[in-house]
Each structure stands twice: as structure tokens, then as C-alpha cells.
Amino acid sequence: MTESYSKERYPARPIVAMWREPFGRMESTFKMYTAKPEVHPSFTKIYGFEKVPLFGDWLDASLDRYEAGEQRDVHQLPMFEVASDRYGVFVPTIIVRWDWVRLAEIFELDPLPIKNPSLPRPTVWSPEQKNRYKALYAKDFEIWEG
Image (cartoon, rainbow, N blue to C red; front, side, top):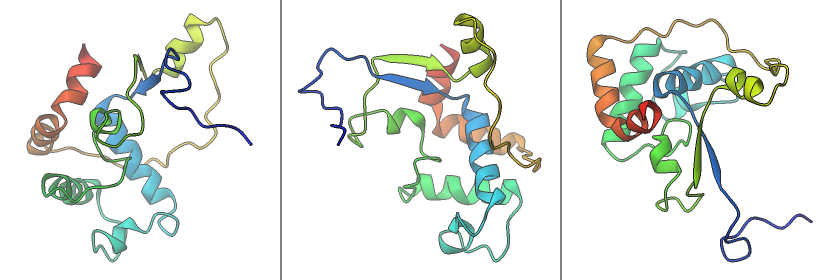
């Protein structure tokens, strides 16, 4: 049996977080959910949609849940929150941009093939949605852009 990581047992071990571009992360989550709605029943169970919604409708519902403090899905929470003591998951000591092509270049490797590509679903953001999302996920954008 593999022992899990603990701060007490491995105090000097670096903790690396792969930081995703915030807009792309939310779009990817929507595409993941719509790829197999029967596997991810959040559309009906959590949001009440009777069929797979348009991205904008789902995004508004998701941001409403986040503002109300009801969002618990780690795919939709800000990365900053997931990577904090609040959830006790981990607090990174190193943050790396989520860029598999660049990482392959750095390590002089061939790029990794995409094993489960997203469906080509439209993910159109209105200016209001972009502004609202950037305000709610400001720390994620700050870390990404920094």
C-alpha cells in the first residue's frame, strides 16, 4: 500500500500545481460535462437543466452558485481556493503554467498526445460574463498573468 503525502513526513518535498488559464479551465469543464452527461449528471441534478444547456446558460448558473457559496465542484472552484489551506488538499510551493507543449520543449520531449479530446462545443462568453468571471476569479487571473 502506498503511503499518502503528509507535511509532517515530507516537510521539504516541493508541492507543484499546474495552473490553468482561467477561461480555458471553465470551458474545458463544460466540455467534459457535455461529453458524457450521464457520467456528469450535474446539468439536471445540480442546475435543473432538462437537457445539455448552452455554455452561457451553464456559466451563469455556475457563477450564481459560486457567489451564493454553493459551488463544491473542484473543476469549477477557483484554482486559488483549491490550492489553499481552506480545503486542506495542498498548498503549492511551485506553480507551473498549464502548458504541455512548453513543458515538452523545456524537457526536450515530444509533445504528449491528447488521449481524450474535448468535443467541439461552442463556448461563447458575453462581455458581461467575462467581466463577472474575471472579478470572481481575480486571484486565478493574477497568478496566471503574473
